[in-house]
Amino acid sequence: METPLAPLKGIKVLDLTRVRSGPTAVRQLGDWGADVVKIETPPEIDPADYSGNRLGSDFQNLQRNKRGMTLNMKSEQGRAVFRRLVEDADVVVENFRPDVKAKLGFDYDSLKALNPRIILASISGFGQDGPYAKRPGFDQVAQGMGGLMSVTGLPGGGPVRAGVPLADLSAGIFCAQGILLALIERERSGEGQWVQTSLLQAQIFMLDFQAARWLNEGEVPQQAGNDHPTSIPTGVFTTRDGHLNVATAGQAIWERFARAIGLDRLIDEPDFRTGKDRSANRARLNALIQEVIATEDTATWVDRLNGAGIPCGPIYAIDEVFADPQVQHLETHGTIPSPHAGDLHLLRQPVTLSRTPARLERHPPAAGEHTGEILAELGYSPAEIEALRADKAI
Image: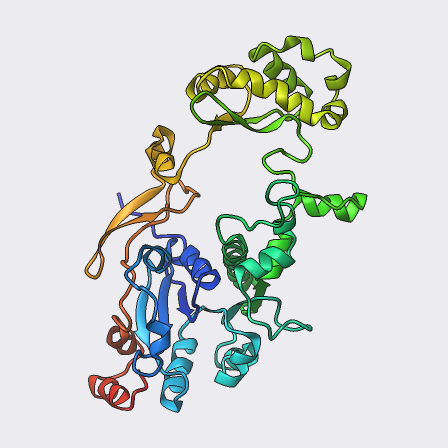
């Protein structure tokens, strides 16, 4: 039986991104079979671009499933090569400050003149225009300005950032979604378009129901720590040997929970009879629950409460996450060999397609590892490639 082609097989992506949000977007495309060409400045032209640990786990996890080439976009010869690449490509992805594109000559209008089918995808800190357009973007700044830090952390403890770069990651994933939508629309119109997102927009969208509370009820959400703002009791309780997450959303689950932990008497108690009552008396209710939960270990409660149909689970350290039997069953990570970094253990995509799954195929490239190969595909002769090297264009 013939192996089905990857969903994005035949789509060529030029990757001009750096740091995290842009590489996250491109990783989504490479994992699903796109031919990604990572374009970097030659090390001798800009050594600062290579000051990080390229063999470290973070870089390797972000940059898999790509080919790598170096290109000096500040030289006319380098820009000429880039223009030829654009003529043969489907997508260009970048996350420079908005004014950089025009200076280098790869703003959307310039790319469209070369290839009307090209899709330019741009991630910025604050948007391509507006009063903050030229500000440099950074994940934690977006978490703060996007409201996340104001609702994260213990009440009265001051703002707290999330433990992962949520603005960067979500902006990258939304950018990839926009690229896929543009590719689908291009099948009808035959034309590309400019896809834009920003760390600030992505972070605000991720506020979800917290934003809806303000937009519709005029309520400014506050920090609630581990307690859920609206489903009560939902939160973290200390067991005899660790901690337990419990989520009791709705009256029926609350009643099952109360019975499962031996607090049936609270079901008809006026202070806890309705969700509104439980919200008003949250501290007292949590204290009563905590007293009971502390009498057994986490595994006992997980088994008992799940058996009663109550959402709950342990709170893992990262090493415990990957030791969990369900996580292992889901095959959340895979291994590919790298000539530069040995065996790499990389996260897989969290979406499964039954016929055309995502793949871990290419090791993250060394700087310029495939420059000659990519230029030869464009029709450059060996002599022309050597001339470009001599001119420091590649």
